[in-house]
Length: 86
Image 1 (cartoon, rainbow, N blue to C red):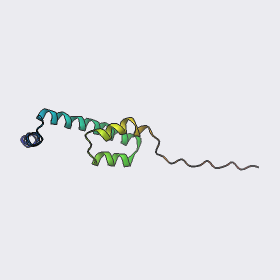
Image 2: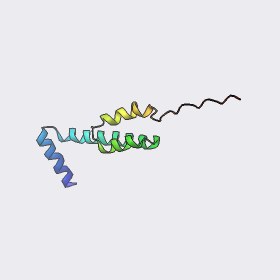
Image 3: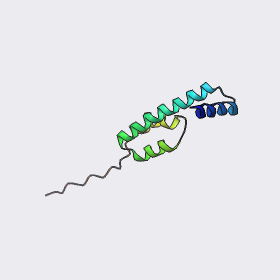
Image 4: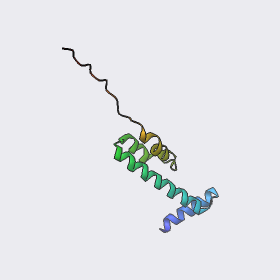
């Protein structure tokens, strides 16, 4: 844990931001990432799962996925075949 606190201290000094703000941002991001990953896995959205796992956007992309994109239907709709007349 000493390395993690040293990293947060360095980031805090480098950006001039309080260490507590950095910790809150990290926790915020982790929570939203886990929610979005869970939801994308449950819905079978493999591409979204991979994108959400790789890209870090401090929760912005994750929030958009949870509230907007997860409700969309990404499956290709196949045209219905016409019924043959007898």
